[in-house]
Length: 355
Ligand code: PHE
Image 1 (cartoon, helix red, strand yellow):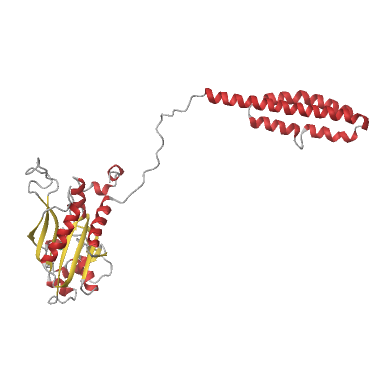
Image 2: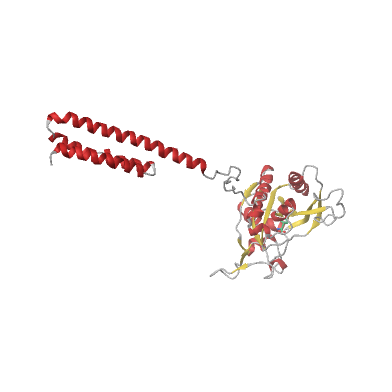
């Protein structure tokens, strides 16, 4: 075919097609794709232009103008359709069901925090740290000697019974090296006193285990242990330190009392009571927490028994000391008014989120 005629018929077909293609494009993306097919490097118009070289010189100018005119038409029609599509999209946006700006937002996931028992434990340890005690840790699986014997428990003491403690079988252990889950944190007394020379002031905290299970007793619970050994330590020092502790925990004006009590590893032994912080004018005599006694039992304490010092190779003629132990769960339950110890271990987020 004659190149001039070929270009002319190509242009006229082209002129009809592009309008149809632009009109059919229903999105900006489609429209741009159609335009590229027509005007792009491999587009139909570009192919036609390649024939231009074969057109006789006297026809070229006329034909060139026709090509340019078509090109302009395509561009104009493209712009017009682009506007149309934009307007249609905006109209659809405006007419769509509006966003409900009153809907609640999506809140970020709540931040975690330490378990309430860990918070109480750390607070108690910090209080003693402020009073000059250092912090030590002891194992939960312990030798009978560190848990009982060196603490001067007689061999037939009820705590050493199968019914009261969790004994652990250790393969290949000698028969006289019996092992159990520690029943209290007092094992740390034995370990630290055997390892260091007085003077020393140590606090420790951790899990302990007893065969007990009801609303106020769990087979696993936590204790804080503290002790101080030096020359000339007397019961007055014990009273001073524990009174300072009670005042920091329960308020500067709280009253305390020491009641005689018995633990094999102290002599004399005592229990520290703190004035009930739940009694009010109206509940006095009828308080459910202290059962009308107006006092809350807070911890066991006493002067370290000379036999314990000797078992740890400390000269009991030269050194004396005091020791105390308290339950972390009890402090937490009293503070937050938690009636059942078990909720502390169920890890229900609805409970934990309250702290
Ligand atoms: N270990 C004792 C208990 O578990 C508490 C205690 C510790 C008492 C230190 C006196 C001295 O009940």
